[in-house]
Image 1 (cartoon, one colour):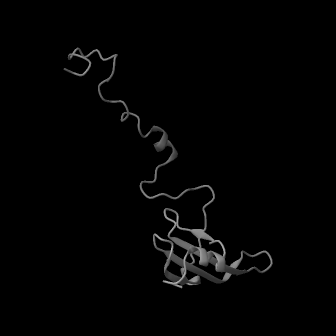
Image 2 (cartoon, rainbow, N blue to C red):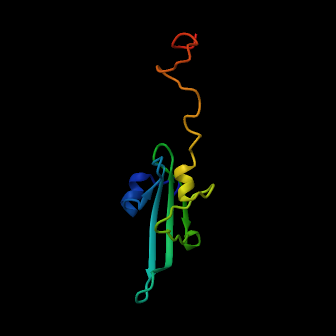
Image 3 (cartoon, rainbow, N blue to C red):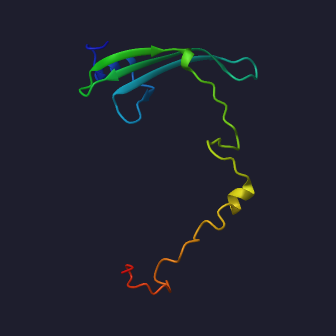
Length: 122
């Protein structure tokens, strides 16, 4: 309960959280999910409950929220392809696409035959 409980009392009553916020320890998630599977079909979620507990810097509960199945997303990984935003390039375009672009400027370094002065261009 907000304003009454702290991290220790939440952990004693609910146990360790299912997930914790990635960059801070101020948010804990308790996830419960029930699925149903018929024969060889993929399992389908019947019920999901996510309890979100926020803490302040001292470890006291500041807010408690609850979410259900309405926010669950069905994702389908694509086996051999990682989809990206941007330009679609063919294999050959990826292999030969940079020819003429890389290293086309004047040579820089100790082998420079430029004779423009010292090593710093002075």
